[in-house]
Length: 537
Image (cartoon, rainbow, N blue to C red; front, side, top):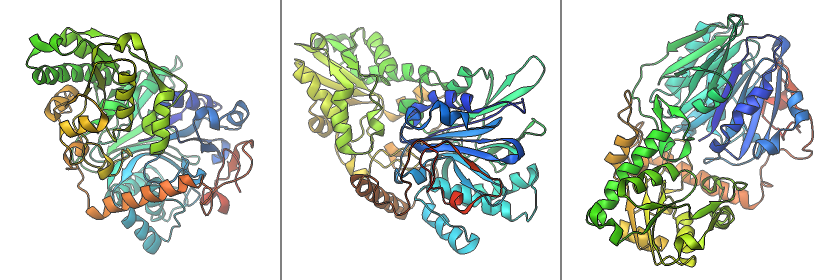
């Protein structure tokens, strides 16, 4: 689950890097593992700066000043099954053909087959475990089939048809051809979000922007938005500044990942015409009905619960609406340290466990001698929930109930959210009572799946990707791929224990270089993507 962004300014002498960085700040919640920007300057020359860490760790004023040009793409990486090496920071780049840069949000479920295909048929070298690199090379291989010195929009649409044909899974991508223009496309099921926006100037010129979430568009003054639809691609040639939108392949389904609404997206975002904020309010109403049923009806709620307390930040909207629906007192019992990142994205179990208490502090006055209903967006491994319940008890709560805005998560997430392997999920093969016992709560109330879908549905969206709850994925999935994911996660865990020192071709050395230039013709070092925040070895 990453964040992608791309901007093309109408002013040929404009500098896009600052706005890319500003937009990325509004998407930082989508990835804390790595960040990167590639811009395109005069004569199709590309400039790049990327590395591990959050935006503040990767970019400085000096590095930003070296990113020249009026067109660029940015990426925020959330680690899935790959490693956290600098070589996996995006956007990725290949010099052949034409100089292509790509940022990818999602996950491909046929990655092993694609790697074999690229090796044996396309003869393209893959340097990382990232399926984003696979997708980029499939696109490059399809473009090579044109055998042209320069391509046009029809050639690109044809090549993207090959991408849709070969790549299975979830993907929302923003790419750039050196000196040509900006590209955005979305998988045929619309699992991952992508929005296109326009910003009009008094002289009639128009800037264009792709982003994972509408909040980034709004923040930068892009007022006219449209969702890139499943199976669609958009090409914006910098010479014409006219977006061409085409349905490259038929829409298979329109099923966004429901976890965007439950947890991942910002509440002030609109995805596929659906307000995330209103969805979370509706989740609170639906969850209130489930809580009332558990305790024998709304008239008996006060016999069991004294106060509703959210786990900040994602569950606040739902918890407040639930308290209103049940006529219960709402209190902010946990104070959040805003300088600690999202524990969900922490790379391993031990870091999650230790970071919960750095992130949250329980206020004794809101817990002491009370029966509390703690509302959270979901319960995944149970690690965070276990710590939170324990903190509530230490603060003096006499009863601790936990309500989850999501149903029990019992299956692997295969489309880009690294929840855990199935057997690590706390609800795997457990009843609700057993989950409550595992996390130390007096009881756990889960949202019903039909109620969750009803809360999120909009005018055009009635169905969602809900495989984490049902085990039935919209694209289908082979057992061999689930085994592949578990193998990658195991390898990644070992890799992190070694502090990234075991990577065979990892970047090393200085962290203070200026962004390097990537010539349109490219260099051998560039093609294997060895970067460390502006330097390459």
